[in-house]
Image (tube, rainbow, N blue to C red):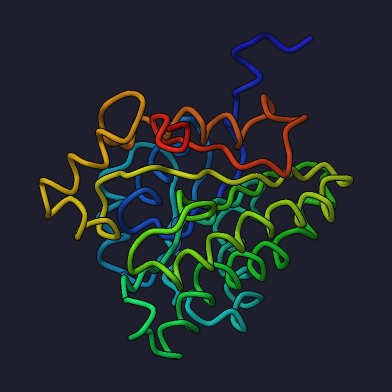
Length: 253
């Protein structure tokens, strides 16, 4: 029987993390590499990806790609597989939040948000699933949000996309888990990143969000690492189709 520690072992696994040039994607790409996985970071900013590799201990590679076009995901999947082979683990962390009031939301902003946050994770996962099926093991971790179940001001497009991520994750699990591929989602609370910059630029607003949690503070990247390693490892073999809220109890109040 595996030891408790070995259940969390991802050494020699190949992981792909989108949005690896900044924020939570970068933090999780680093954490997976430090845990022993061979990690391919994907983002459109080549210099930021190079900086991530320079600062990360472990075996890493960079794939510079614009994920905004879901039609390109089959080609992107081939680039991702080039350094270490097809990934066993996919973390879909890239995201977009236009923070526009519903009355002013343009069709272009709507489409860009739904494409990057919802369509791209599905079509990239679908392109990588055949290799996971062949090996009988895989992990897909999507990024949900507090807005998967709650409405926030100026968040209509983002909230719609993240509501979709919740159902997409369940549907992915139904389709692919019989082949040994678990599909789950992390739903972070408020963490300081480029995406949440407008929140943390306003000290009063950030404090209000911290007060909304049960713990009494906003998140830090280390708070997300343990849950992510759980969902990426054999420890979560019997967990699929779930949304794990890592929000300090924000949604409990």
